[in-house]
Length: 196
Image 1: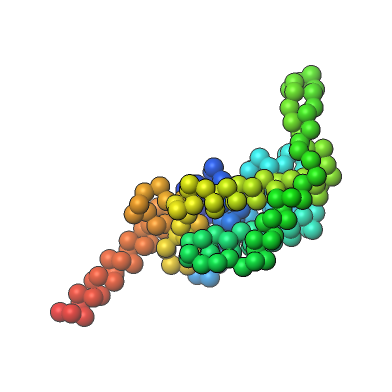
Image 2: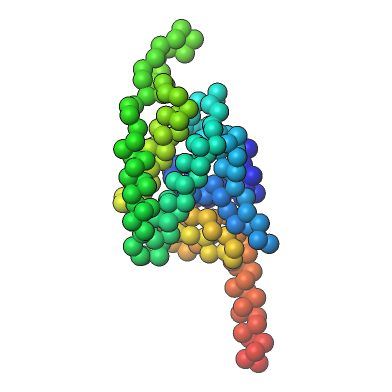
């Protein structure tokens, strides 16, 4: 279960890279919610994203790898939104995740569920496979037709990313949108008071 007290940001349901980038969020009052805070939480996040089987149990090493990928993806998303050049280390990290997977999920048959594809790897390989899927999604998102829709929430203290569903939308949730509108209204009121 997510520790983040906000609904999913627009686009994160369709893009695991956006969901990973938003798996840690700064909250008002200097608080941070992190869905990858422990190996068990990181496992639950991957299971909820349908990237690993439910019976998976991540090790601390795997959690660290996933958190590192998240940091590098945040660097890439931030550079994309700002229109600047990303750090070469972030690009290299995503490229390593893309090519690290040794094989695709194998075809398996069992009488109860029929044919299905399942990863047949130790836990570290499961995480590498999940990270490759996330990296592939990030590469496609950052270079594809939706790249122009990537935005960072404009609410004070919120640092989540989203895909803009409307040209004027610049926040990740109704809660953040309310904070943005309230701050704008307060600024206008203050401006009028100072002018009058």
